[in-house]
Figure 1: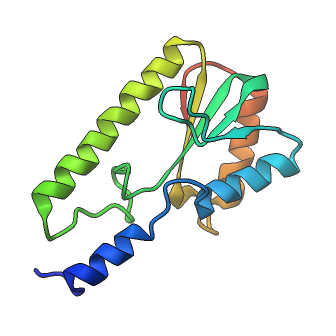
Figure 2 (figure 1 turned 90 degrees about the vertical axis):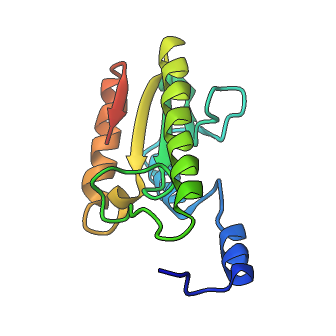
Length: 146
């Protein structure tokens, strides 16, 4: 199956995809701020440059795009039909890097919470954000998936 766009249009579209301050990140940040949590964003000094860092809770939050971080079993993750080798390598490399960086953070005593983009859709956002708040209150260690 061929791409519905020319390579120039596809290149432009891909260049417009943001790596930080994405809409899902902003949703989580606005919620946290409204609940009285204070945080820093995209902390480069920490492994993996976490999207949101709550130092008081020693917690890092990663807000992952379902496609870019290979959300298994999610309807928003579908392997591309063109340039398959490139995309497989790119996405698998991202997943492996995520695992490595999260393990580094955990080894250094950080709590890790991963929120998937699909969990911030209208049908599940309230549940996801409430669960996030509860996890921060518990402040228990380890890798968490909201």
